[in-house]
Image (cartoon, rainbow, N blue to C red):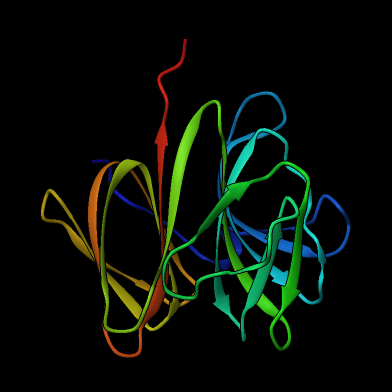
Length: 193
């Protein structure tokens, strides 16, 4: 495993949604060399009900990072709650996703992967919880407090609130004390050609 790359707010980039209805803070991404991305991890400010931007060919995983909650109606199906803890809600980024807020603005964690090049999962880590993951790319973002991260080679470090650790090729264990909370994501790249 390579040494972690530690990121902070100065490294993040605010970008408008494709549909112009809001803004997202891009935490980390890998460009695909064609003007798009292989994967992207971001935090989106969702301030009202409405449609999500279409991302054809992209698979998404979403979780509520802050706020009361939200529900998504995906491709005409009945709305489902977006999780605040545990595994995020996975769905296609193709058109047909509508959001309804449960009581005010929400910050949504969003992992997007090019479905022809990668697969990904997102986990919302609750206070006092732990998470383990293995993949080609591992992302640990602290929402509250400081998350304790340990790699398989025994290295340990903390990720403070608002910070992100980006790791490559390996496995980690992340522990949230009280009142720590965070987001953990794994991207598995598919062999090319």
